[in-house]
Image 1 (cartoon, rainbow, N blue to C red):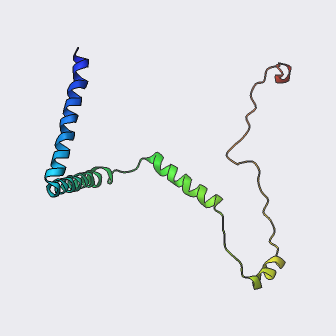
Image 2: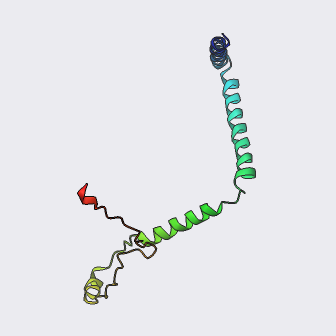
Image 3: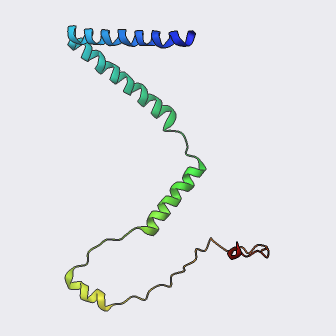
Amino acid sequence: MNRRRLPIVLYIIIGLAVIGLFSQLFTNTIGFLTNIIVMIAVGIAIFSVIYFVFLKNRAPSNDMKKYKQAVKQSKSKYQQHSHSVPSTSKSIVLNKKKPKKKINKRAPHLRVIDGNKKGKDRATF
């Protein structure tokens, strides 16, 4: 029975709040808007104090530093360089062919580990 009373009381409180909100809006509009602006300003002030005092000075974890470093390295590796070459120097650039670097297809940090294989062939299943 206690569970059934709680929503009814909650709906009554919300209904009275809405009625009070509309009566304040229509009878004292300037006071209502002033109260809303003051509440928003106080909320922003409290949030900024909490953020700058407690959250901003927190040192990032070692994992986050490693992650940010990896993201930075990845961006620098896969960044597309888009620069335009003037038309007069295009023929010069085309005549100078740079030797291509040999691309290593296997990543150096990955390696194949041969384990003990049993006599089962996967194709025979």
